[in-house]
Image 1 (tube, helix red, strand yellow):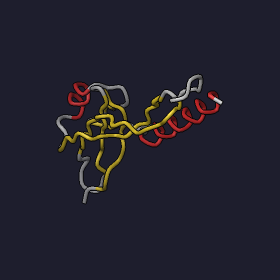
Image 2: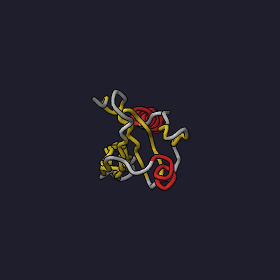
Image 3: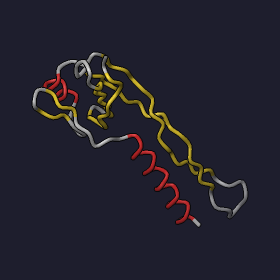
Image 4: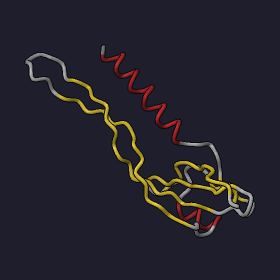
Length: 118
């Protein structure tokens, strides 16, 4: 029973992570900034962003609740936890998409496209 619950949790967590990350890079002056790069290296390559925003990204968290009955197993509960991250937005020029770089613990967690600049 616990193996099934653990497998379901793993699939749920993997699905949450896959949906939030992207394998893109941000091209700045012929160099790329990608997942794992520090804030310092992104700033060196791309300059200052047009905006910085702190965001709360929900991620699954497992909580074990002890049973009220002696000998009964603990109950597993999956909740959403707020993980603080920072989004930096880069303007790639008219007709291009905004570049959004998400940082987690000071390193690039993902890079994605925003709206098209008009």
